[in-house]
Image (cartoon, rainbow, N blue to C red; front, side, top):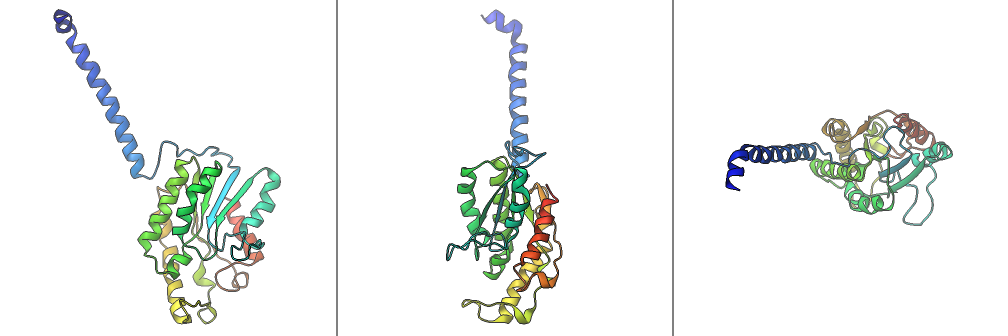
Amino acid sequence: MKGWFKKYWYFVVGGILLISLVILIVYLIKRKNKMLGRTESANPSNPSNPKRLLFVGDSQSAIKNYANGNDIKFTYPNVIRQNLEPKGYTIDVLAKGGETTKWMLKNLPDQLSKAKYDRIYIQGGGNDSVNLVPYEKYKENIEKMIELGQKAGAEVYFMVWFDREKVMNPDKVGTTRYVPSKEEMYKRHQIYFAWQKKIANDLKGKANGIVPMFELPKEYVPDGIHPNMAGARIVAKKIEETL
């Protein structure tokens, strides 16, 4: 036995070194993918022809009023459903008025357990700024949602949204019981305006795609926040152009 080992020891040592090298390479690849926000299952289930879509957002993406249970008819997911479901697409929505990206992140895992999506679109941030959520926390929530979606096998797109600064009138801005001052509320909206200008760059290499900021006519956004049906059709068109 000793003679055999003495004669072939270099084959044994070489084999051990080769196996160790392979293990090291696999580890380094996984570590790099993790740093870039990718996972082994990040490849979308149907990248060339995404048919099952999920929209995640706040009141601008919502299709149901959770306060009274009524359907919301004028938001862009409704338009996309009308346009794409006859073509074989399935459209799901995870969105609730008044909520921040924290709510979206909390509820996304449960939604992902219900269906396998080809592509996920994330919209949000306006409520984060109104609630004085720090930018880094807002960005972190989005990054975590991107990672969750990719782990579930979906492409994840972030929607920068339309240019809110160009349609919002400081004198007509809405208030709440928590922020009763128009001046203070507009200042909080201005935080979001600034976020819109940098979030796309900060998500490069993390999101599979970005729907860049675009413009809507002021008359299509009466309150400076929520597009009417004419505005929703433009939003839907911008999203459908990415499919």
